[in-house]
Image (cartoon, rainbow, N blue to C red; front, side, top):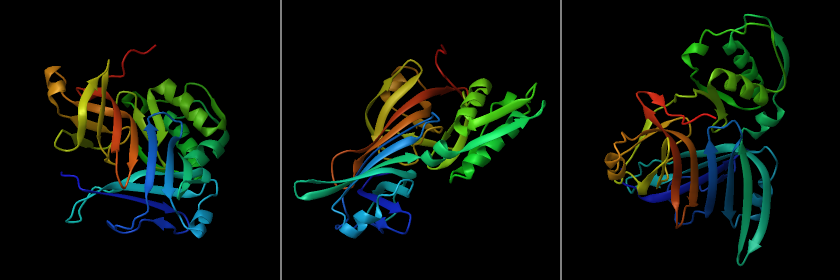
Length: 294
């Protein structure tokens, strides 16, 4: 798909929308740097908005206020790939002047409220399925504003039970980390949605990245995967796959399928970079190469 005009739109709870609608020559400049990965820590974003009115500056500033950032390209015919690249909550807001511009710099976290506030204190009898304990922890996280998304457990966890009574107490995130490490799966929050993925698996669909569809430069092959940059595409997200096609990979006998372990989005709606930097682990015969475990 050919890439054309850039669009970046920010939406805050309360109905404030910066740059609504399609391409507009009077859109406000928005810059962003977003980091996402497969860890259970909150994905983060720094969003800078230029020259907001005083009333709008006063509307952006409360901790845990919801924020959604959409970005992508819109061709002249109007059918583009603008999509959500970050959904989370405000952590901190700073307003400062640089020359003639007033900058509103917003630091954000994805699922920060749930990670900080979701707690539990409960005991489960011997024979309780592992998935039932995960469900109970997820319910507490859901109460703090996180939706439940796609879950895919390792096959041996589907019917696995605890062999002795099991107690969970304190942070739900910490308890999920413990259960995930012991049972071979990752859990994380992506755009305020909790996802579960097997250590050697993936969820969702596949995004094709080639020089014709937005690949930037040449992929760098790593011990168990790849690093590559591409024109910004919100469908490239952790836990999902990308398929890369390039001469470098073909020369190295690589079939080009990877699970995204980290994605960093950067750019603005006016000029300069507008891209996603991807780190991926190779997928071979339907399984992810997790590398050497220490």
